[in-house]
Image 1 (tube, rainbow, N blue to C red):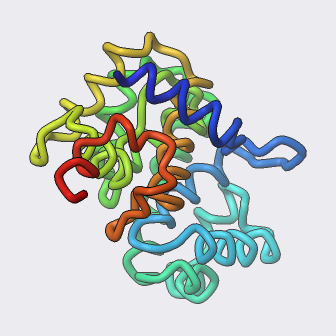
Image 2: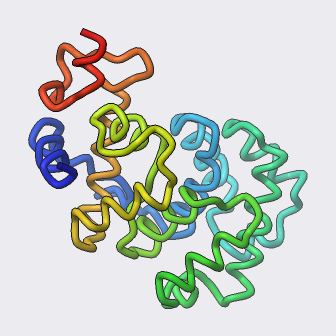
Length: 218
């Protein structure tokens, strides 16, 4: 079911081309910052915050380590919850700097690195896995709210399935592959934004024939 869902969405939406974006110099640090800043806000707001960082020459590890938290708050303000996020960014970049940069850090095995990331304040499962998948290029699937909603409505999972159980289902259905995991995550977001919303648009949904939610609400 999961593999067929991926194939159907890919055929319907086409490749999404998320991080790293072709033709753009998305650094690993920028991707990590985006993963932290996108918590509880829209990507448009994150882009504004990243643009501010770029204009101030702060997409740079040493400069981010050196900047004051108060100044950083003002720069990332468009991302919302800027006081909390500035604190999280500072903690993260100090951690990366302590490990002599992202390239060296990302050489660690997936399991060990994930455990380390989850110990950092402000980094939960989704943020850690976004960093691992998109910045570190590790084969791990990112589970977000769209994934949970879609899988639940398709009855792939029960409503209260844990993050780990959902992730495990994907890993069992699709063998480890960074590009496919990236693409599948992006395709589920596309489906969630276009059709499988809280107030769903079922009549035009590309997976409507497989959806138990439609059957129950028709």
